[in-house]
Length: 209
Image (cartoon, rainbow, N blue to C red; front, side, top):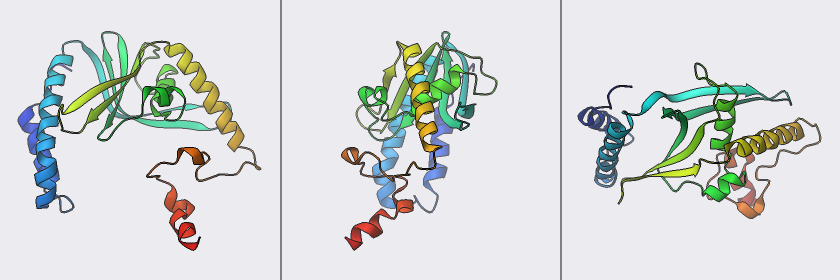
């Protein structure tokens, strides 16, 4: 907690990753390496500023809580960081993060669910806390190289209550034998990429049509 990471060490780690066979190509180096350097400088600058008020930090930490429906809710948070008595729940994004409105509407529940787990003591060795702030760190290496985007830092108690109610209703619904598991239950909000399209054989059905 007392010292930020070293810029040269971060660059060395980046060079090692970029030399992996799947990345070690001229086009990747030409486009992505300058962006990585920009992000690295921004990141070290932020770490240098934050270390003065940092009280605790956990990276890639897994947590879980049990729901009334019998489902165990699990999550792995990119970064949990305590700054001046407030826990910051941070998710790294290289693309455009969801809007604050979309998060509060429940369309992108990742950060609220992680906040719920944290508030109920689901992350090991972290005290229960409702002093929370939710952030996306958008790291794209452009101009500027990164942004800290606050999702919510107020009315956290209301958000936690809504999140708990919503996930309880959703899991209870899917515990019923007559509930269908649709590959995309909201056809009016189709995404360009879905992790589960291949399981639903979407491309196969589209070709058949």
